[in-house]
Length: 263
Image (cartoon, rainbow, N blue to C red; front, side):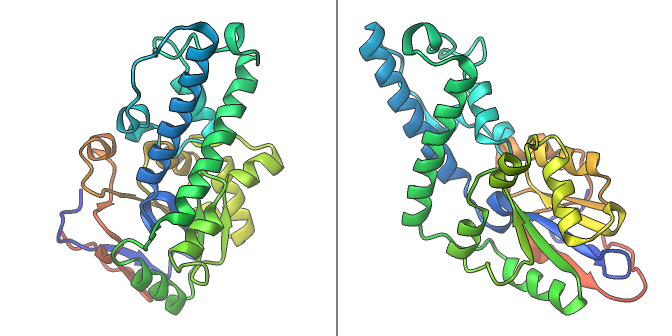
């Protein structure tokens, strides 16, 4: 594991393309997404209480969207949140009407709309070192793509002032359009690689969630870097993955012959 002051090497002689997670590596959208899910679940349980007369306990955003769910598509998050033994497992078809799969889609759409509202109102900025890193990629002739498990990758980049710094975006709109599974399935990342015209072994992935890192491993990326932002739960989930950096300013982009990583 690379120490907090060390530098990871991205060798342009071996890497032609880079895919970066827009939600957590380029920006920090997890708090917005957690808040959107909290609002969604509050509305849902309020409706359930009106229909059934049963009042559910208050919901906490940080508890309802833990780090291990970040990186999943919204419908997959909804499925996990309604899975036994969660306290909301009974808030489904018998009382509110729609079948379980439809309920997942309804909740996902509600969260998506709320996330978009919060995103437009937020003062979103790029994480430390991102602008310099993307400029270094351009200088080295390495193409960059951003990925997101939300439907708003382009909006995220625009809000953070990064929309001119990456070649393309892939997100939940693409999974819906092409009928792809979300992380930990490799399908979305494989789509990014095809659009970048890069073989997997000539590409690098930077991600900060277990689901996306697993998708990268299954895609065969030549280099996978786990980004740890010092979140206690996220750090635990990323333990054992190498290399690991705390921010993109710890990554050097070089051309020419490979140089060993400094430890």
